[in-house]
Length: 320
Image 1 (cartoon, rainbow, N blue to C red):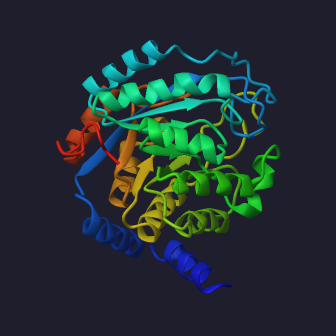
Image 2 (image 1 turned 180 degrees about the vertical axis):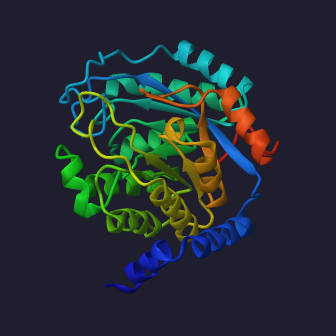
Image 3 (image 1 turned 45 degrees about the vertical axis):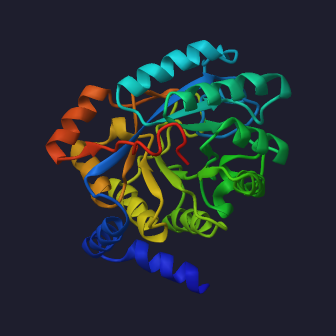
């Protein structure tokens, strides 16, 4: 086993109390342990995706009854962004169910970025695969983050997706980094993968030329009609171990407790925050999956003594 793999495996598999102590120690060295960055996610184009991701109800190849929609109008997206900011979000994430953006849609996408940026929020887009020119145009419009998850390990990837390769994912991330955009890249746990797959996924992310500035860790929410609709639930402690290992391997990255929170107890979420998660999505929907509403999150934050992170005045409007 290569040295890096050995180190990551030793981190992941150590006694849980030691793992949590190490993760919290690393977390406190880089972040305020009681502050959580809040993002809002909007699906700007839902359904009809030509990819065959086994977890996704937006795939046209899966048996979901989700109907496809057209790209949302720019002003409607900006109105939603204003509401998100009023609710406390400091980053606005916009996702389109595409294999890659078409040229006819780029002007609207760029206008969305400029409009959200002008509100003083960080901007994030997830649009599928990008070429180098598209990445540069997104950067010029002011995009702060580009989300492109690698989903799982390279070994397990073909069990989940066959319409693109693991290397395709990596190449898009490299183009995003070359354009000077921050990377938001993570994965999904609970898809039938092994612990070693989860470790390998985190190693891949940590081994990028620059580790992702934001690392969303999603817990599978099985969707009716998809190939993973009946997959057994993941042991919650494995989710906690994944969060903690991500924090230790990528100490300066935001680690987002992402999809799956609606299925987690308050106590499990608290363990994930202690393990180093310091970012969440707010709002009652994540693309097509459920999410705790703002009132429930506010109560949880109050119980745990957590607070929403606020962008510094010097960052507003030009956050990077």
